Length: 359
Image (cartoon, rainbow, N blue to C red; front, side, top):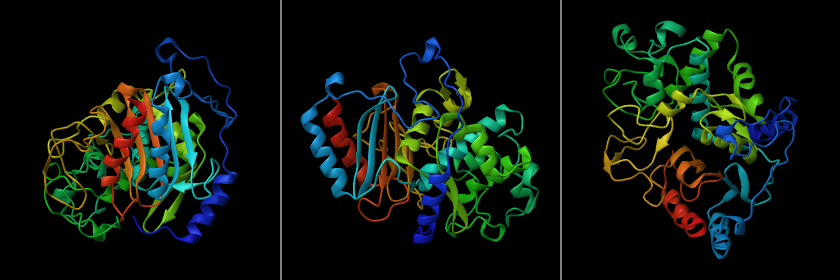
């Protein structure tokens, strides 16, 4: 992702302050989700639990917070069954301050793609060119027509990932047939064009109506270089993590189709076991990383629970979802060490400290 400019930051602040969720009335929960707490849509109030309620190791909280502060964090939240257990802000950041999701926001595109498919607007097995026309790449037409929406979700388009972030046709060049090569690539943003064309409205409007407003998020898509990046408060990121933890349901409303979401957080192709539909998956026997064709053996984040899946963004923007522990963990901030596209050593070191708290 290109460096975020001061201008974009100021614009984000102005936009997010002006954004508010719908005044929809909360609904009664159903028995399936009765143990999960959902914060109200029209308020920033959020119920809490204490560390002692959960019999966690309270003496390990301060070492965790010290490490987060040392590693340039802006904010950190742990939810347990939807309730806030830990919420801390650093370096002047607050619960109303906006920050960018970077590539962690790819998973927002995943969610919207699933919603659009459930509404019958698209089919992820269709060719991308069925929706946005041909010549959206520089690949030969017969090769371009091999690329499906699912290939974009799973990073298996076969397009050259070495040419930078730009997703213009001239920058989308053929390397191999779709499905034959895994490469982390910003071509996924074409899914936003697919949804916009199929829904006959712009991406932001569809996103707001189908996801953001329905779970009480604030925030905005802001242009950064050649593509848009989502900015929001940390609590808005936590709302999306909670929605995902709850199998795509918000109280009684199924927002993201459960079957689609299950596919999204499991291996999507046989080239990178640790990748679903723009979600990273822990506990697999091997994985690949951005800007590399090397296969690494072992789990993506060895210290993290094996069932964890994650949205990982440049400079260590994180959403960790761990069903077995009933937790969602959010971290926003500057790069913990040097700039990294997704995974960094920070993930493993952070989980070492989270485990000391929760186990």
